[in-house]
Length: 147
Image (cartoon, rainbow, N blue to C red; front, side):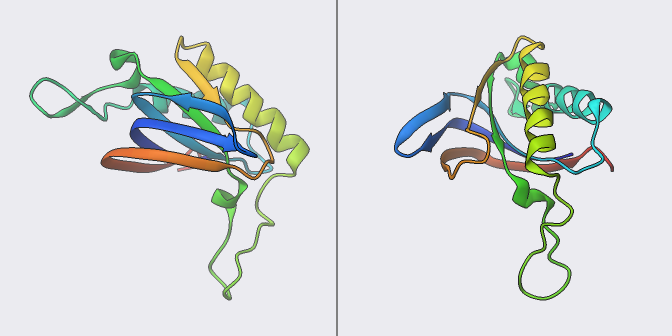
């Protein structure tokens, strides 16, 4: 499971002109699912994300987690994070999980984040989405449960 995490002042996702999820200060998480991901990947990744100390403390040092800050999560499914660009000029998507499995894993990830008492908003799985992000910092991290 792979997540691209961005610290944001605010973010929202829209489908067909309708906002499906919107947060203030927090993290925007783009989530890619691989076919062999499991519940352990979800638990590890959610724990890592909500406890990352990437928000500034009173001294301007990144020392505060999303939980400490009482921030929000915007979770957006993004199979393209599983793309392979090593050969040719057109990415290969064969490493991405099939949509039915990926949807189950995505829903479990969202539920696990909510169980940590984090306000969580989402995009719409498999929809064409417009994501509006005000990246704070900018702070952007790639986290892979396999590494």
